[in-house]
Image (tube, rainbow, N blue to C red):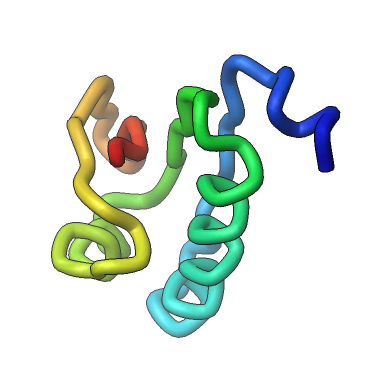
Length: 77
């Protein structure tokens, strides 16, 4: 796991469906746990953003870029 600590930026594509997005939250938790210094960006469709806005596993989000379909957020601690 020490090689994960040396990664500076991580981009994660979130699934398009709400149920699948919910199931991805443990992955986000462990990505943050094993790579605490990395900047983690989530790329998702706008329709699933509410799954992450009030989810304690995913912390808080800062909108960085938005298109007509997608949202790119930075995962913050």
